[in-house]
Image 1 (cartoon, rainbow, N blue to C red):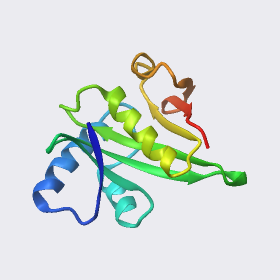
Image 2: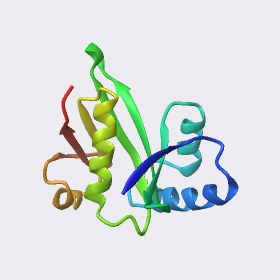
Image 3: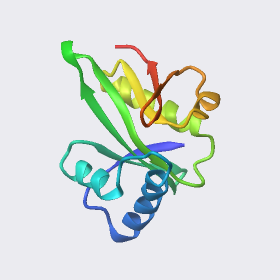
Image 4: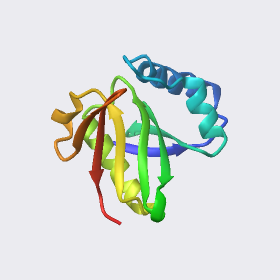
Length: 140
């Protein structure tokens, strides 16, 4: 599994596949994000669009955002992650963690369904308004 930052604007054939992946993630219950909003954040440099590849084959897409907290601490938020054939999602999140650590982030966080606890047992989970907030300390 390989994650690759994608630059905006996307080529039309890739845009269609990316948008389908993000739309599937945004359609999940209690998700308050939209594909248009996510892509606008990426185009404005406020978030990073990431393609997920199995070899050369595009299989999923995600959007991440590095946030700076009081005191300077950096956290990588996974805003969206979707795709059908991405295989083990744990491997995808591990790749996000490695990238976040390279950027100096001390945590990786996301909001999702509580079932992610089975996939990512190293994450602390707490209920929140939109589902379950997951966080893992990764260093820095």
